Image (cartoon, rainbow, N blue to C red):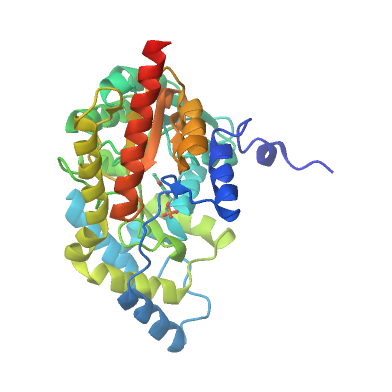
Length: 395
Ligand code: PMP
């Protein structure tokens, strides 16, 4: 019996560089001291106050089916948060609570695209994007954001691709580049969506982690709330990756359809997780700043190290938990560099190519090791690149 074409085509061909990640994990399991700069996950665990709220809720009996759209208090809290951040009046009925941002991305594309529709996304991209689009039967079409533009997608490129497309998926602050889109970029995105009548799916799961500039949601621009599906999550902002708690917000009618979809897929999110999320939000912006602070600190540590050399050039990392490093001066591809770095230095980074063609010749460094280990890994990485470049010149 053959599985469906849709499920068989969900991921692309090849290992996309994730082979390196699994090789690093295998080396670690065999007892080798590998420093991992691969995964977008905090080096701390969920705060005990949030766990206490989770336990109290579960013990109070909130372990049955929760209402599918999300508990009213959490939908209200998310709506108030989005109203404050985007200036757009937002009510409970504009919000669906989902098991994480990933489920929200799937639901948004399912609701926006018909079979065979062209669904745009920006390359370099977060690993699941093309598969999520293919999973709903749409055709995933990348739009390159080029390193020479600081990985900001150009309006002309968006306009050209948008013709005949159905949706556009954007992500700022960005994974994998750490880049925060400028107001000009966000305006270009909105104009392309309006000019070609696209649904805009805006993945803002890193919106509390902005180190330079400010986060501007495209939903905040005039007229955009009617065509924007905003994806959010507590995974990154509150170090709650394992709790699987996120949302999608949009026009009320669309959210109505998304609730119907949830009834037939996830059937909601556990009530005790939602109450923990509500408590997490009540801890306020100071708590969110605390969760993000280590990434900012390590971004600065890395910038200092890179200032003393000429080989590696860094994309302007202004947010999220990553730095995208241009290693083309070593003469290697991102994949070759990452492979050799793992063998020679026992340091694991992600090849830029695993995030799309526009990431070629780069590596992504996750800022997710404790400061001392991060400093050691970054120092050795920079030295390794320098040695490679000298050898390339000498050879
Ligand atoms: N979007 C981006 C850009 C991400 O990096 C991630 C997780 N790494 C997600 C969405 C999904 O996050 P979650 O499902 O944990 O909310």
